[in-house]
Image 1: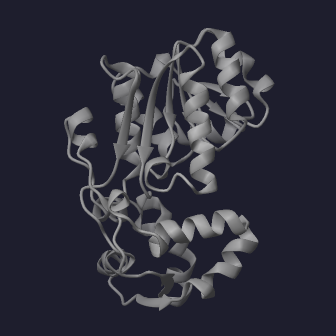
Image 2: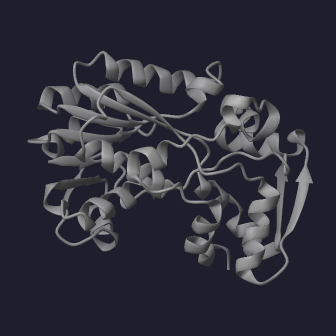
Length: 280
């Protein structure tokens, strides 16, 4: 039995779908806070379990009989979840961390991810750590502006990062959960090439068949609203990663997706084609 947390999220839902398509649906338990909602979007036959990642004590039944666990760091009580998994007899955890643990280890979110990685490695359970770069799906932040204003205001519009398709993260997670040779491995995950916000907006223009303006703004312009929503430290971290503190390690392209899954990493264009309706 494999327990997939965040089963209705960008990565978890795709992971459940891939495992089901592979014929492993009966061995998947999808953890969600709302089983009725999850049942409407996940494949039939998948075992649904309700639990709150913020309350590790609510996961006991979900973890009962599980041999492996898929977990995204920073979503809930990571330390409590790992302790509960170990106590339940889970043998292997696939953890989604972040490439910023290497590129920006001084930032608060990166330090938090490193702490979770360390906790997992010291837990006694086998582990696989995935470190993705910026998600292609982050551009959903622009959806309302594209729909209502046909314009996106973004700092660092010409700084390119190798955004990764969430389905590729799911594909590597599936390989790690079901195949040999992945335990004790740490995998950096990127898309196939750097792409700038301006280039992403051009892809959306192509698919929408209309003009979408890319308006460059300053860091100061965007910091206030972001800090109000996320907090000052997280806002500064996000802005650093968008271009305020870009280094070679952050923009480097890794071939991990192809090596682990046998298929090339999906480009941003593929993600945009699959999700363009959100911008209409």
